[in-house]
Amino acid sequence: MSVHTMETLALFDSAPYQNAFSARVIAVSEQGIALEHTLFYPTGGGQPGDTGHFILPDGSRVDITGTVRDPVLRSIIWHQVERCPDQLAAGMQVDASLDWERRYQHMKMHTCLHLLCSIIDAPVTGCSISADKGRLDFDLPEMTLDKETITRDLNELIQQAHQIKTLSMPASEYSTLLQITRTQAVAPPVIQGSVRVIEIAGIDIQPCGGTHVTNTEEIGRVFCEKIEKKSKHNRRVILRFE
Ligand SMILES: [Zn+2]
Image 1: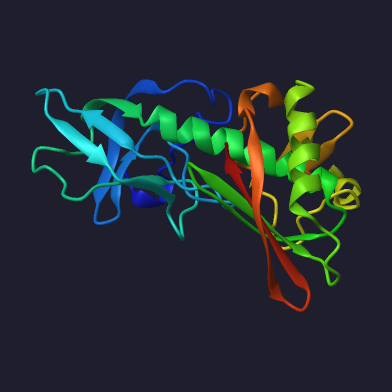
Image 2 (image 1 turned 90 degrees about the vertical axis):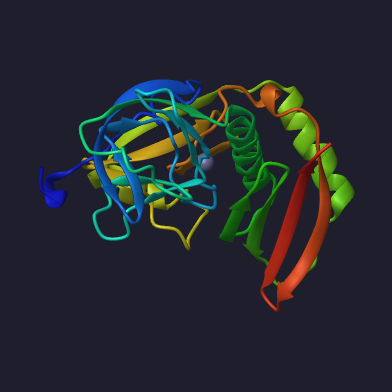
């Protein structure tokens, strides 16, 4: 198979709660291992790529240290390894598992950042997520935020147990959505002519390619740890799990 026709089918969009699967290796390169399909989320939109491991047919284990999209051929997802075992080759079937605890933390914090977006009325200019904290940067010249109010409002929304829905919108309709989009710095991921839109009914709606929980209740308690002034027009709000 030519590298230009290769494609990794992304399963993490439709099955965000599934953490183990079996798949055929389609390529091995310096960039890592590519599979025909994967549940591993590749680094993007402020969310880190998944880690985990593969079990090869001979029973040996290969640790996956990260996941990225190919910088040029965006339809290929590379599972990164410290060292590739010699026997690993295209055509081989592997059993793959992702580090679920870490990924679930990312899903919770990612969803929480959507809630944070809804309570701060300013454009978002940056986003970063890890297993224990998350942050958003807002284009906000005045210091009108306070940690206590953010913590109280966020936990209230979380406890109200709102459902999170994933919608698929034709890219042609996306201009309408632009009017309600908060993240101006990030272009929405367009997959086969469609934009993936995340909706928390009545609270937040925006295009997003990340992984989310299905109910805000799953997030648990969080607190606003810090509000930093990054520049004249930039306020960074840092959240942490309690
Ligand atoms: Zn999102």
